[in-house]
Image 1 (tube, rainbow, N blue to C red):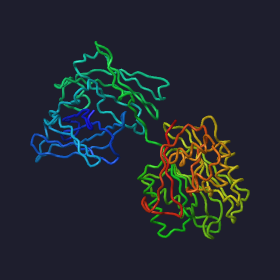
Image 2 (cartoon, rainbow, N blue to C red; image 1 turned 180 degrees about the vertical axis):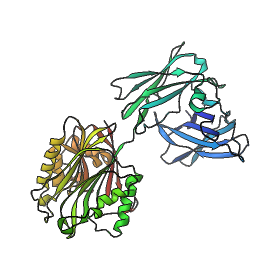
Image 3 (cartoon, one colour; image 1 turned 45 degrees about the horizontal axis):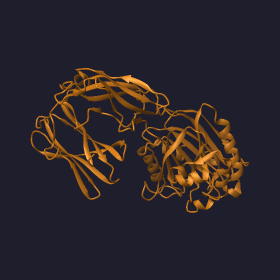
Image 4 (cartoon, helix red, strand yellow; image 1 turned 90 degrees about the vertical axis):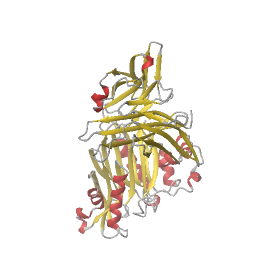
Length: 501
């Protein structure tokens, strides 16, 4: 293929809204030459005025290729006509060079309200395909453009929700009123470009990920559109887990920083937040809920999360210091428990952990523990053992995954970290995401010696995932740095994303 190719263009005039609108869509296939690139559609309507429409990344294809999509909607107005027929070309800029698909100098063209026009040499095209499953979406519409000359007899979708362990089939139907029924458009089916639209739907239910291929039966044989052998994929948003030690109200501009934390949770669409050094005024041991920093952060979210919190000891001489857990998703049950030998509220070595069992749609039940343990010489071995045993008791056959998140006060590679590795029960997820080779050496093949491999890793905050959990980490990011929402504590935050295995 060339560096950039047209997959299809769509030109519709729809009357589904109070004002008549013209929708233009362009889907292009590009060779992935560089991360830093730009793709534009340069187009003009019947008025002859040229416009530049930026495209955005959509999804990946096989062989280092990507789909990019550009869309615009223009409304009819007393002082503005609709564009009508459209001429266009595709431009790709990367590595200081510029590439075009302009139909060999003649430009591409698509008539007003004509439906879809695939690029040359594309007899079957997945049209209007999405790259993600929305929360709550259970029925996924699929539209397939088929060249009339194929004389298709049947079109069907072959799909799976379990990585092709099992396969389901959903039929598509050909309806001459497709464009009118779906968009209140006057486009014909088949249209004058000679393409039929067949449409169907996949009953996704609560599946997290769906992969599918399009099968078109003709009198000459079977034609597949399977995304160049990769299959098309739809996936719900990854589960996002954030851990952060709040520094127990010891920050300058503390109120502003609590707002920044809430802003980041909202901006980043975090699902679960594990907080440590959560403070509220001591008040002779009775506490003061209005000053609780987890409550304040939660109240500043656009929509408050479910909140579980408890305190362990007197902090900095004036606060009840504890831990908290915020969840966007329902909490089925929760508990708090001392994992330290000491339960003296006046001892800094008294450490309590909160646990929540969270029901995450399309993922399952998660047991999450927000933890703040002591240093190695001050009780970490005993505290981790008590936490590990408690987590094991809660990890029933109904639980998808168990996470221990928070401040463990053990440097990566230290004695405490080696104790976690030696337990052979929990894995360091940030290391897995950011340094998979080192993770493999330490947690999978257990290749000794390895502790010096982490000499430059100064983390003491972790998400440890129980082995055998049905989740895998896909990314790890450091937040609340000078470059990312600003520092809000003497600890950075760590944001990790997970998907079902």
